[in-house]
Image (cartoon, rainbow, N blue to C red; front, top):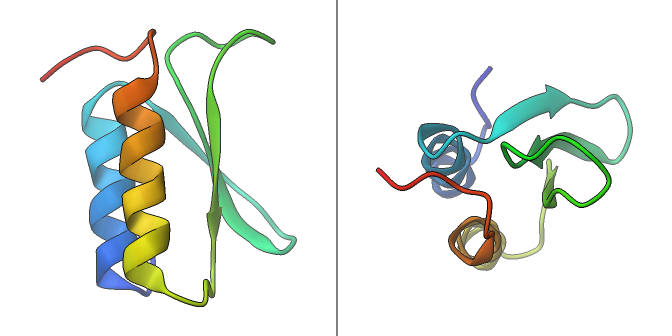
Length: 74
């Protein structure tokens, strides 16, 4: 599923390309990204449906992915 904001959609794709997985949500968050290390020590990032500044939210997602020690490089 694609995010309606192109900046955030690109950041989600960035995470998916690096081994993260996306779980869709029904609440305030549009979805949740999880790093390849799927346990309580793994990294997560919430993807919001209507952030105030989409560019900032996309940058935050990319930063979480880049700082994760479990992410595979492309």
